[in-house]
Image 1 (cartoon, one colour):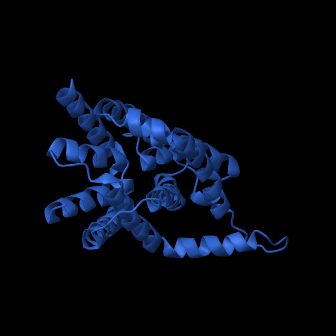
Image 2: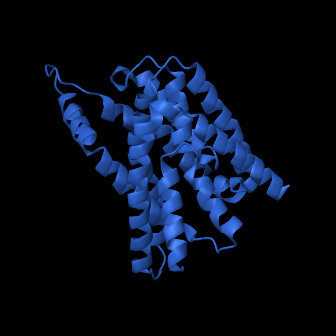
Length: 264
């Protein structure tokens, strides 16, 4: 893969992984619209590994606190119990099951511009509705196991290209009354086990075959995804209360309409 392709691929995946606009849709559409050869699963794994590193680094203090709270949850007397890690694990189960059961169907049937366009528009409008009419009165500390399960079930819809994993989980959080920051932060933290599962599964499948990897290219695209994802998380959260979700909704609708215009 040419160097400029690596840079563009890493930038697009890193920037869109945590924005509510669907990174998987952009990874599918990039080679189709640019006339490039599909980058393949190896590069998809590499860019997601970079994004994983970014979210872990950005939320390192939250992760440390979650681990401490998780250990405290085993104590009957500890007053510092925090069940957030349990909620993240619970919310990961539905998408894990959906991925195992529907992986081949999604890979062969749903990876089409028409599906991406429809999902982008429909779930974009649902995000707008949730942002406009959600109560936004609850914080992340008020999450319950029921909330986590609902957000996890919503996340399972993200196997449909164009839905956006972050978009659908933020939507569910807003519908449950979470404020924008809490819904977004929980969504970003939820990306950690999801990316680990997805990349681990794809890596396991690749390990059974004999393949030669261009490690320089893979490290390059992963590094670009890392830095662009970190910047995406930082500025999304910084500007969120000022911008709301409307800019991302408009982008999704325009993207969907453009795809319909091109492929119909």
